[in-house]
Length: 612
Image 1: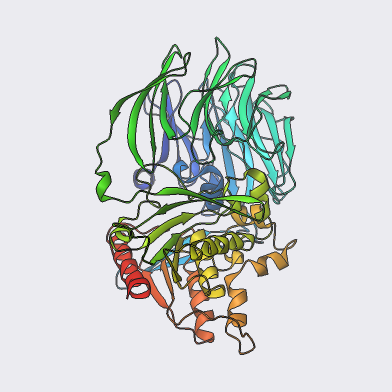
Image 2: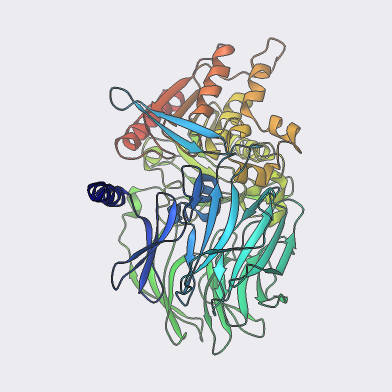
């Protein structure tokens, strides 16, 4: 018996040693650290290395403190590394989410590496499918028995929970909640003692709601940014007893709260307020006066306020001005450039801001004319785009990866980065246009850009190419296949070609659920249009054979390679010839040698279609 016990003990020790401790996170007082192991939550005392297991039901389907995929990707963000537990400020409690993936469909991703290959299995809910069931738990580490107190939520509801935060006294956990259709948000204060909840804040909107993020906390409440009231983002103060006060007005977008001078009541933030394309630094005083502290002709970033709030340092630039390191005063609203980044302005593109109007909306772009530009010549164009709601691709900053295409500049190609009405520059009014019809209304804005380009005397009207990745791949394929009279060719990378193939939280936020918007899903799918485009009855313009190049990574856990397989199958059925580049085990965004190959292959494609 003793030998058996010794063997069992050794096996247990080996299992623990081989198990991987994930997301090891120290407590605020530095005395302990929490982590997950085999999908259970553990805590380790750093004074004696004693480990305590806090949950006991972790399996491949039950995840304690470790996020289900859709939460990791869409709610917590990839920077979370799947972490789903949170220390209280007094280091005495741990809050965590428990995910039950039992009803979430499994999606396999095959890797061809090695003789037998391998299979990665992810519980990935696609539009209309079952989400993970989630429970919100709190464990008191100072208690004799470290049992979980469950928050008073009905786990059977079809719902989402946002990233929680603790009250300063560690007595309540604030949890944001949405129904699956994401038009309503509730913020609850959950008692750490018994799990009872009280409602602190409610919000409803006609299309969709974003999670509360980037708050600044005080002992009386929190500052937050919301966009439900004026079609633009405004700053609010929410007291912990539920009183809401709006502190700003005007056309603010991209608002980021930086720091609060608690002594004077001044709140510092950056926003696109005096410019639709440039974030500037502002001070909001307790009387509601907003003071501009930087030059709105440039984008500001890396702001560091002094401890006395009298001065700040920052970086500023635009696509035509290299990065400047500046020092400023908050009392005099003065700026001084202390250092400029060296750059050879003569030997690189200079993207200029362009604005047009379509259907009552302002549309923005950054356009670079080729090296040694001659207005008497006619130049081809490469248009770079994205198209997703609230995601601007026109970023007027120095060296932006999408705006500064040196190869186009050196090879006699105009390069333009364009945004549609829904990208954010038009506030909620523009974004809401995408509701229930993603990749439908945006196309009309890209066509407006193509028409504007074709009207310019120096543009070769029949040689406009388009490129995009992810949502941009979806948009690109739509434009090349459906509107070849404007877009001669295009490169579509990593796209969603049927929104039934993408995850629940992102897709349904904008498209609603398939149950309530079946027609919208059909209109937004590239696959819907292919039989129509290539039918004998269609007398309209047809895409040129080979004019669409499709790329995808087979290891993409975000937009599955399945999307491209279904697209190329649909194109083969109508005998449309296309180019295809597959990156084995490539992820959502190619890296290393794959990135180099992708760039070189794209350049060869543009040479063939736009220059030869």
